[in-house]
Image (cartoon, rainbow, N blue to C red):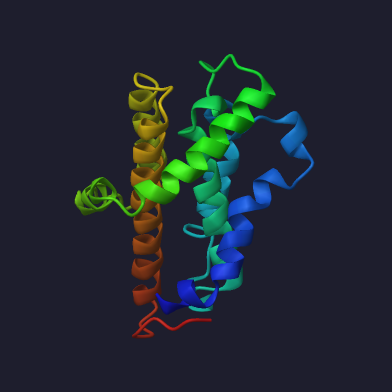
Length: 180
């Protein structure tokens, strides 16, 4: 898995890329409007990915895109219950950014990561995201809740995607995973 660390820049670029494309203006990053995009992004690096390529820049960039959409789905202004202005949206996200920086260092974030949740297929991952989003909608509107859901979902989804990659890679009989 060292390929992930070798391509941190690609992951970072992927994590901001959805906000840099023209469709960002016309298509809101809500689960209702972009879930199909998320599904296609996940398939690109699981079902449709040639594992023998290893963990490439392409792979890590798409992993970054996936985490972007997940984070948006669990951010209050990206949900139908948000009725605020664009300014309020931006202020909320600014505050969320600072809260996330603190939260990822907290015991709560570590505990959330320890909970095991096994997903072995793309369909299970997608079902998990939708199920968690339904749960999230019951507590939407608080930065602390957004932090908890974003970190937990990103960890679990990325872990599941990497598990699928690892399984596919080992099926090749190549042996130890190598960074590309």
